[in-house]
Image (cartoon, rainbow, N blue to C red; front, top):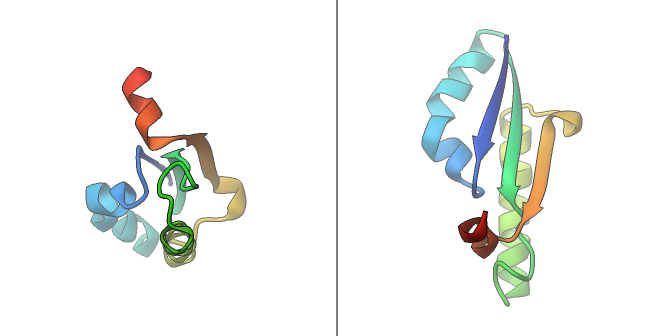
Amino acid sequence: MKTLIIAPHADDELLGCGGYALRKLGEGGKIGWALFTNINSHFSSSYLEVKAKQQAISIVLDGLGIEPDNFFDLGYTPSSLNDV
């Protein structure tokens, strides 16, 4: 079974359905992730904070076994979602 996680912000994927995703992985399922917001300088003026968030995303991708072709970074800035 394939599961697509849709998350407006990084960390919502685990807070919202992390347990479900882990269960599906345990059952042999494949996980995909659509991340609406991009973690870049619009997120924070701190280079280290941006790098830490990007590293956290990489850890989640590895931890959930999400293949690069199944990760969709839609690239919205966090504040732009208010206008959509």
